[in-house]
Length: 600
Picture 1 (tube, rainbow, N blue to C red):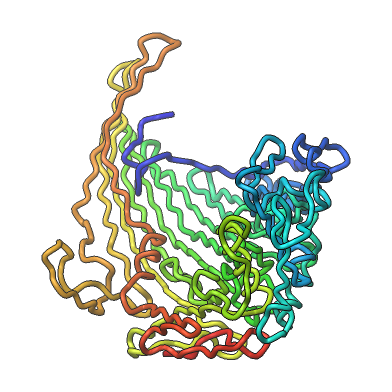
Picture 2: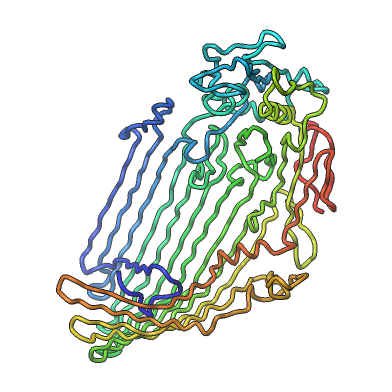
C-alpha cells in the first residue's frame, strides 16, 4: 500500500497499475493446460441427500506465451494466447430456485384439497395439517403418506377431496389448447417436497452452463537508441457465458428449453507509448490508446423464437415457473480513447512530475428496460384480479376448503383453462416527435437507445522530496475538469426549474447536457509522509481530496426515467382500461386472446 499521489486520480479508492511483459534478446516460450473433471470430484452432502447427481464440472483452459527478438538489441516481441472451454452445472435451487409445475393430476383437470377436522386434527411429523402440504405425500413420488386418504363422502374430514374443473367449467372446454400445450411440454415433477404436494410440485436438476472465449495479447518494443524507445500493445478478450446465465438467475429452467439468458463480453485495448530521455535528469512518457468494453445480456433473445414469445412471465398463479421470458436484450458498449503525458524532472533531493490525462468516454446503451421498466407485454392470469365465474368451487370454512387453497384452486382454473385477467404493456415515447413507438416492427422489438459522451481533462503536479534518509514527503495538486455528460443524438431532457420542494409544476425541456455544473474548479491537494524509524518499520500518513465524477452508468439510469419516455397501458378483462389504451376481449387464450396491445 502507499499514499495516493497527485499522479493518481479520477476517483477515490484503489489505484491499480498493470504491466505487460516484453520480449528479450532470447527466445522463450511456455505452454500450459489446466483441467478439472466431474470424474475427479465428490458430490455435495445435500445433493446426495436429495438424490441429485454430481454437478457437471469440466474446466479446460490452455494456452501459450512466447517472446524474443525481431532485431537483436533493437526490436522485440511478446505474445500470449489462452483458450477456454469450461462446462459446468449446478443445482437449479442455487441459481433460480426450484421450478414449480402443476402435477399430472392437476393437468388432467382434478384439483385436490385437504379437508381438515378442527376438533380432531391430522398430525404428520409433529405438524398439524390444516391445508394442502407437502407432508401429505411422499417427497419423491407424490403418493399419499401412510394415514392420508381420499375423502369418501362430501362430509368426510381429515382427507383429500377433489374438484373437477373441466366438469365444472360452464363452457366444458377442457384445458386451453395453447396453455395446455405449454404445460404438457414441461417435464414431469420429480420432487413433491416443494409446492403444495397435491396440485403443484417441483423439478430438481442441474442445468448446464458453458464459459468460453480466448484471450490474446501482443506487444512489440523498439529501441531507437538509448534515449528513445517505443512500444505497441494490443489486448483482446472474449468471455461468453452460454447455455444459461446462472450468475443473474437466468439458467435453463427445464431440460430441452432455451436458457433465460446468455452473456457475451468482448474487450479490446490498444496502447502506444513513446519514452524519451531528454537529459539525464528529464524524462518524458507519452501514451495514447483506447479501451473498448462490449457487454450483451441476451435475456429473452437467447430463445430462437424471440420475439414470438407469449408474454406470460409473472402471470401464472401458484408461482408456476415459465421456462422463457420475453424481455429483450441489454447491450452496452463503452469506448474510451485516452491520451496521457508525464514529464519527470530530477533536481537534487526532489523528483518533480507533471502531466495530463485526457479521457473521451463514449457509452452507447441499448435495452428494453429503460429506467428498470420492461417495455414488453405482460399477461396475467391472477385470480385476485379476475376470479373465475360460473364454477361451483368448494365452499370455504369448516368441512370445506382452506382460504389459501381456495385462492390457489381459482388460480389453477385460470391458468389451465387459459382464462386471462389483465394485459399490461409499456410503450416507449419518441420525445421529439411527441408520439409513442410500437412494441415491434416485423421481427424487431423497439429498443431504447442512448449514446452518452463524457469528456474528462485531468492535470497534476507533484514533488517527491527526500527530506532525510528515512523521511520522504510527497505533495502536489490535481486539477480535474470533468465536463457534464451529453447525448450523441440530442435526447437530453431536464426540469425547467430546480427541484427544491417549492417548484410547482415542472416542464422537462430539451438541452445539451444532463446537468449544468462542469466543476472546472476541482482542485485536489495531496500530501503524503513516509517515515522509517528503523530498518524494519515504515510509517505512512497522508491526506488528499478526490473528485468522483458521475459515471455514464448513473447517467444512463437517470435518462431512462425522464417523464414521458414511457407510457404504461393496462387492460383488465371485463374491468378498467387505462385511458387512451385499447380494451381487451373476454375470450380465452386458445380463442385468440391478444398477446400485445396496439400503440396508444
